[in-house]
Length: 495
Image (cartoon, rainbow, N blue to C red):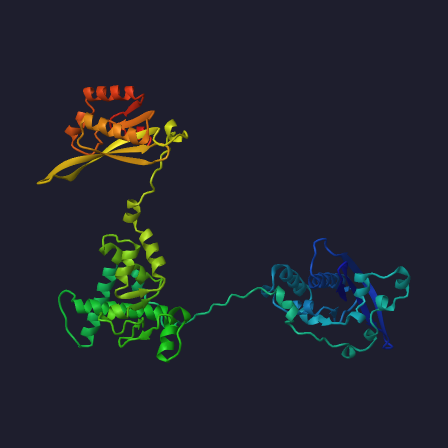
């Protein structure tokens, strides 16, 4: 008998003898107990350890008493149906922990010798759970086993367990199962074999020509015609739709509603079997492809090839232009995100839009950040020439004029004066009018380089040494500090 609990497991062996007067005597020979391991183990595994201990005890008793006694039969009892189902199972079907112990048990004792007993009639239960010494002295079940051992073996309790209990399935190894599924429409790798829209279209056109020749319908030789390429494109769209929208096509053929993602497009199937957009342009004076474009999925290799082809044929067009060109004959679901994704993967376009470098800027001039009244610090620049008309009483004369821009460095206010030419006198006259209107300036910043709008030779008249001297004398009389920026360095003016 064997039994186990959460605290330990035990095994006890009895010998049943029959004398000449047919009297039966049952006596305990040997028993052993083991404490449960520190690592928590499930109760069915502890029951298996108890059965393993019992098998070793029985094998030991058989080897020791075989020369003294004639043992007719050996019966091993266990109250765990899970353990009994493991013992009657082939070890290779079980997990490693259970399989190792079951294999050793089956080598020592045949599985047919194991039988089931109830917990109330199991004397090993006393050792696994423990009893008091005062109870152990007169405990008949422990010393002599259950009472039905006095009866003939046919009257003993029968085993009631199934070889494969539901609770024992946890220790079974998962059996890999290979399943072969036959696809109703096996995928055609021709659509994914090419990386060019033109090559894919031409190959499919030649295949359709071969089919036409095989059926002896039409006979074409030489290069592909426009009609053949168009037929190949329509057939390519049909293959893509059959692969991406099989349920929608079947629903529309049965006059049922399609999926929600296509309902807003009011789709229909045309005479060629293509799924097209319904829309509201049926009466428009447009071609059939523009009024009812063909519907294509957003994630398909053929759609990516079509977008790349349109993008390259139109000199690497942008997202909006590529979408407009595609919308003339196809309607791609979520077109903007798909087209943007494909264009961002274009290597030439990526090279043409490098990330710009933003250099660190220097400190602003003191005149720009110091609060002051308007035009106290002023920047000056010329613009022009402009053609103007001078009206006299009897005639109209055309001449050139320039504008002199006065910009406040603090408030960014702009004052415009007209200069008749690029001479020094004209500039001083414009400056005098400006001072009369806006007040005196303390600092004036001017560009003396070639960035004045006008002829290069005319500009030199303003920045000659004599002109500089005359401007300096005027500024000194008005108590104005005149700052001339270095040539070809307009940024020194702070604007």
